[in-house]
Image (cartoon, rainbow, N blue to C red):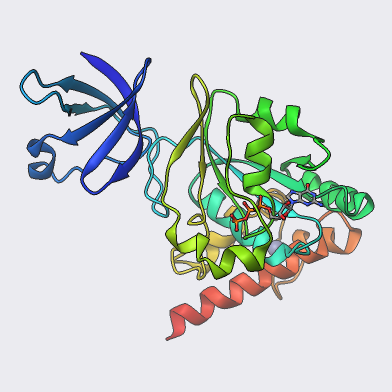
Amino acid sequence: MLKGIIVKGVGGFYYVKTEDNIIECRARGVFREENLTPLIGDKVRIRISDEDKTGYIEEIYPRNSQLLRPPVANITQAIIVMSIKKPDINTWLLDRFLLMAEYENLEVTICLNKSDLDLDKGSRLKNIYETAGYKVIMTSAINHIGIEELKDTLNNNISVFAGPSGTGKSSLLNEVNKNFKLETGDVSAKTKRGKHTTRHVELLELDDNTFVLDSPGFSSLNVDFIEEESELREYFREIREYGQKCRFISCLHGNEPDCEVKNQVEKGNISKDRYENYLLFLEEIKNIRRY
Ligand SMILES: Nc1nc2c(ncn2[C@@H]2O[C@H](COP(=O)(O)OP(=O)(O)OP(=O)(O)O)[C@@H](O)[C@H]2O)c(=O)[nH]1
Ligand SMILES: [Zn+2]
């Protein structure tokens, strides 16, 4: 009997990382009957058949978490990689990623990469997002800055690396583990080759018990997963916090009187930019519901 974790799935085969090596496995038919599909990230028990020497997944251990997009199990945290410049940081997108992470109930760390290009801007952003309640690491893949802190954050976790194309996700992973030789390059060259569409989902092993998923999938173009307007305020940490002191318990922090959130935006304790993104998302959710 062997135990392992599914790191890749291709055409009906699952690749299971055991203590010693990676074993190609099939799933037992019984999973289909139970309507259970093995997922990347699943911790499994396998058996090697004497006849054909292939591995069979015998049991899937209970999942701690399950992401929808991309479909992976047991992810413990998200590392959201944004570049300060080239491409310029887009905080609307960052807040969108954060929303997704909060919705999925993941631990989250923001990685502000390419700090070599504009340290001042990086510091300002770090300050804003730390004030909002997030852990922020400033990195430079080319100057090897912040890599140790990033390593510590990854240690003993199964993390999803998320962020727009060209922000340096592959470059950072290559720094974190010198054995990785992930393809990096300028945005236009990679887009031409359709890198984003052809890349499959795979867990990379950084260390024992430490895996990362370099995935383009962890983002959402719409907010249709949020059903009620009132849900949104729960996913903005600082708004959730200050919102408890609003006059009305139902306050959506828009035009209501005595709104503590607006009050704190005026005082500068809540970032105006974050608040405006909150209002934009709120408007979007309203519109989904109307049509
Ligand atoms: N100046 C600077 N450039 C960087 C840094 N990190 C990465 N780059 C460059 O940014 C470009 C994109 O880096 P990648 O690592 O390929 O970005 P990615 O996020 O993996 O991109 P996708 O695979 O398209 O999602 C490359 O040309 C890198 O050399 C950094 O810290 N500073
Ligand atoms: Zn309010």
